[in-house]
Image (tube, rainbow over all chains, first blue to last red; front, side, top):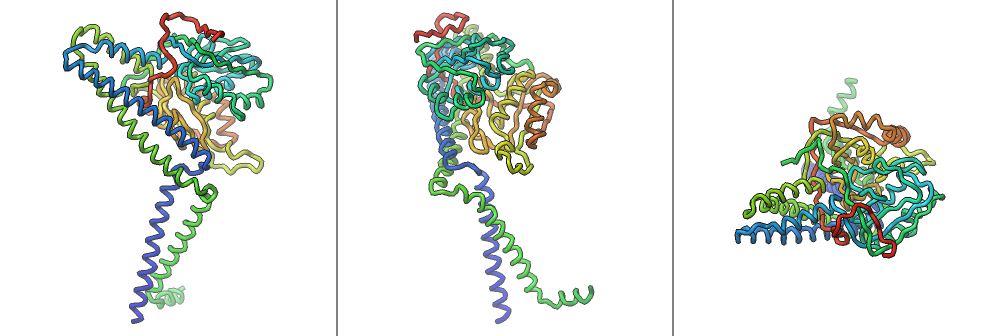
Length: 224
Length: 259
């Protein structure tokens, strides 16, 4: 009888032990995702994930239409030259290989801003959905960097004057709102670089030139 | 000593088993409470559904990315096998392939380096900002700008390709790149010339970054130079909604101030 009770005690302890091990492992695994994000930050995350997923859904729809047309043409024995041209235009525009035009904003910066200040503005414009960007006549594509100390800023080797102008194509109200909101990038710049004046002007027609860079890497090849 | 051993031997074995089991139990209870503690800070009623929603959206994103990659592969194949005016089709396909590489839509392999950035392990000084001890979006942007300047030709962070439209922003202790959620450690993979690291480490901007972040706050920066690096393709939309090709290809960016 005495022995039986001991066994029961041990069984009960082992049961609780096992339960705790599982709970602990689950907590470790689940806690790792989004650890340290506040409710407010999670809301921003959800909004961003929704935006990206919507984009991806649109892309899936576009690609499905494209594929259907290609398959149809092939079955009819037609060449898909129009589709290829349309696809080429779409990709070249995105890459910065062709000049672009559309609604957007121009941002005029007066005063001694530094390179990282301009990069911060550009990053905020991209975050607000800017589709094509240029500083003066230089299209901003991967590899182009704005750098330099205040009043000595250059982009892609071109020394920029004062004032300097950023051209951005995108939804004018979204681009303007994102830059000028309280606590936004312009407010931050005003606090850290008080002599710099940033003016945002929404306009109907912004023109952004094509890049003159060769964007095909010399040191890489397509991975199959 | 032998007296102690004799006493230990005198204890019934079930008691020893129970002792060990209880010890483990106590440890686990303590560990459980310890992991609960920091999470309690944010455990509000609205947080749990948000975490669940974010998790579901991430899963959807993964599935959508697979769908996009799959469709792109099918389209490329269909375009390649097009019949008709073979020469024109072949020419267009070559141009398309080049444009896709330029746009970051093609995965690449080649020479390059991998930089890994991790949060500091040093305790924050009493008067310091805790955020200074974490890798943030500004750090990643600085590293990317330095890599471009050193001659990098393609860059990805934790699998997200840097494209003409990529923004990098902070979200709590993590970042969003192309609106994708990335958490540390951050692996910045850069394709470039074989002497990319030599060029990078000789750059005054890079030296400033190491002094300001690694030496001052203990941000951990590691570097690897594998035989070849793989840069993934950008998996997102390249369909622009506001920008359209300019009818005439005039070279200057003459934004119309009249609107």
